[in-house]
Image (cartoon, rainbow, N blue to C red; front, side, top):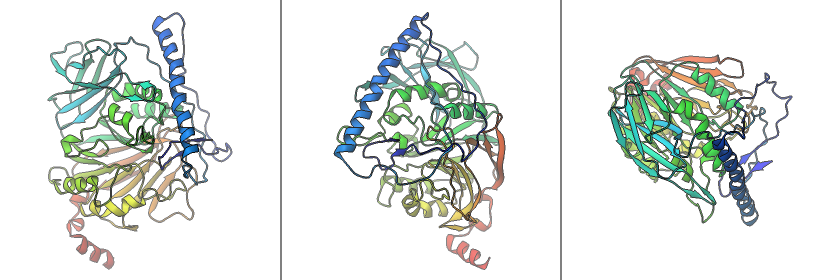
Length: 491
């Protein structure tokens, strides 16, 4: 069975899933959709659900037609098996048309936060009231709104309001649109330590709910997602469902994301550029970093510089993304931001049978830039498994190259990529096909701790961990690349 995205080179095969390949612990279904006919609001939601099914079917019919008209090889030729995925969770909206839903926040500069939400009511104001005491909103900010159409689907009113300046390490309470429930978030700390949660290929399944529950069991400061958010794949109501599912988490800690292949949603002639839903629903602070596209940008938080690269937009040496990356790396002050971390979707290094070589052309185009800038870590998704590599440059171990981590195991609907190549590469230090999440705790300017938490268990279990030294603190890596090559040859 296949889900076909027309004219997207990374079609989404739903692979055969022999249950005997990988034994799972029993999983208790969560978030069952309970419908009641006694609540008129829920009755409206039921009507919307029926309508949504019709809207979801239309793009599928068009994609099938596209497949018949454009018989190019859209289906993946890979033949690997996955661990069974969890049941899809459809999360309804139980509030009124004017109540905010799908609330999430993201960082904008060093002292501001963007609050994004959706209302079914087109007349709701794009305003956020906020303050440091619950129920007392002494500050108010007004923002912008947008909406989009995708075939027969019309989005709700998408609100985006930037609030601030805000104090670091402070809890703020806020309300969206002048009504509805109260929310709260905590701003990142002004100095180390700081903790980041990193999860790729999240989706909206029972495994997703398990991952998010495990993430929420311990505090953290910022959530990072290297692509593949909702797995809507042109079925736009699934974007709404995803937003509601993650709202309890994304409304209280900033979520910084970059795109994956499942965000493309392009269609010949009608939607040739793609990313319409992603760009409308998840705007990131690309303008603040000099980028011209929401598909790649950078930001700084607590003396750490993050670069979010786009695997599915041009990245060759003549591209805007490449030129922007050169400039962004050149402007980093390692005295002020000793840590530099990159997130992208398609991994540059991968010993799993899944998605072999899909990040290779991007690696060849950009790896040298990252190496010369002494990037500390590179996180990727796409492959639905966990894998941690040593520090690498140009397919060889290099103490001054980035440490590469694949973490595409958040809970996607396709299941896990079970098959790794054998014998294992000496560059790959730990690999496991299980759902989970990662945590990067930066203690100071020189040291950080990375841990991967498997959630196949009833409680998150730390299955892998390693201490990391920043390259900015390494005397050996302060040499020029030519000097470092000579030193590596001596070793």
